[in-house]
Image (cartoon, rainbow, N blue to C red; front, top):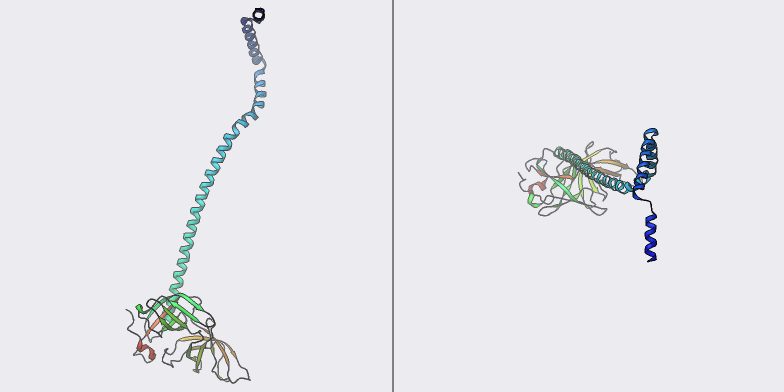
Amino acid sequence: MSNAASSRNISQRGTPPGLRFFSYAVLALAIMWLDQRGGWLDTARFGLSAVAYPLRIALESPISAWEWTRDNFAERAALQNENFELRERVRALELLAMRRADLERENRALRNLQTSSADVAQKWMSARIIATDNSRARQRYTVDRGAVHQIVKGQTVIAGGGLAGQALRVGPWSTEIILLSDPEHAVPVQIARTGQRTLALGTGREGELTLPLLPLQTDIREGDLLVTSGLGGVFPAGYPVATVSRVRRDGASPLAQVDAKMTAALDRDRLVAFIWFDTAHPSAPAEAARAVEPPR
């Protein structure tokens, strides 16, 4: 009983509600009068704004960071896609340029092949090199023409610039060519300037020949052109074979040491040509009689 009474007495001693309302109204009117007279609220608002700014930044930072990250990744993805598309275009243009250059080289090679054919040639067929075997023991090429294209063993092969070799092994769709530089190959030649005849042998080094049978006093010099002599019944006369690259004369030996470089552009062109000769032509080799009718 005593506790309840004391609580009731305390509540009765509190500030009456009407007095509190009156006090708040007076305070509000005073603040409005001060603000109107001296702009006190603007000053207070400015101070509160300065205090609230860091809190506002802290609250908005996660949202701003998320939007920045999202925009940054979206822009990065767009740039990556654009970069990829540009690289693809550049790659396509590079391939187109390489293909165009390849076609230009192939056209030049075909023109050189046609130019290399003498009037004794009745027909020629180009072939693409698909494999090489270049070593000191073997100098061979494999091309994409064979028996189905009427290629026969021993058939003459030229490349841009001159004689390259002859067909060694003929398969249905491919042919192995033995080059003039093969150590097992020999071709009768003559010096175009003097008409001196000799034999050019392969050295096993790519594009290089040697003339081991020339007497010491033979009139031959660097730069002389060697052409087929027509002897042996394999190659017709007059086809360019090689250019003399070095001549050495040693008094201790009765023979001159002569090296030559093949004129066939095997290091640049990927094309060679098989030749069918006109058997009625006086310069046609005897081997031409074994060749079948050339393809039409």
